[in-house]
Image (cartoon, rainbow, N blue to C red; front, side):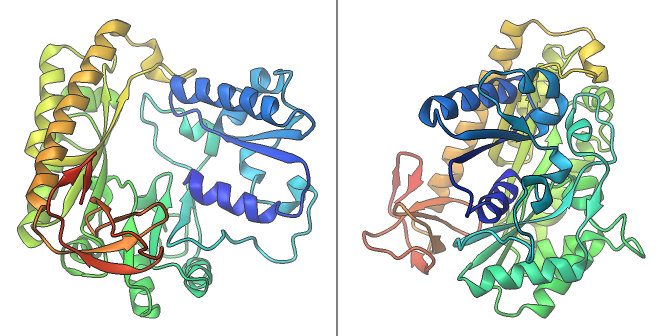
Length: 379
């Protein structure tokens, strides 16, 4: 989501001289700390530039970010893609530069109220691009050479809920594939599994142009913690979803977001979190140590000691790394169609990272049969 937005801003502001924009994040306390670091580093590197900050941290922590001596001004998160907010011409909507893999933000904001999450404060209510707007943006990316498109959003599976007739995400994906036959690879970013509609499920399970890669906004493996997070799924829901998909598409690779050390989490909850990695065969894991966010219900719950949170996060990362290593090892000797990127690497449909032969041009799709592993890459 932030990649898609940052590249649109970069294109929109391409004619502005001596301007630095920090597109900030506030999803965790660590993200906020890194935002402040980025602001200070940008000022050191560009002492004479006009330094503007936008994004979620600039919305949620507006007063303290605005008070930083390095910052010249703030742009509201809701206005950051509006040329008028930057005093630049806006005759045509800005498009991201050419990339082998294009990120298209089809949805923004969130209508849910997970107890740990500050994102609705920073991005507001859920809102969707129309089908026509999405098709237009994807066509523009394809015209400049994109070989793969990634649909992204804050709460991707809520796309369409605010549009006439409340179409589900599966309708959008089906329409994209039907209308844009030249699109060879479509990938979906993080999704709420409980909102995967029947048509979207069928496309994930059976459509070869939809990449075999499911990333779930899972958050935890213990039902009591999921309830206290105010998530809308149970552990059994996630297990059932992945089981049905893998029965139809065995090569699908599963990713998930998991939070370590959520308030009230005890050792049994932590063990459930560890075991869900194995039960779902999670090979693309994003592990987050819990950090209290201002104004959220979870910040008022009994907290787990920080050293315990860090230790549990380390446990989860180790378990996830072992699972990923075993998965990559199973792919050795298998021929994979890899989309080449800059730097001599690329990604298979299941998002496995692959080292490419020297001289492989970015943007080409080549078959690679890896013979081993090198520094986390199939090679």
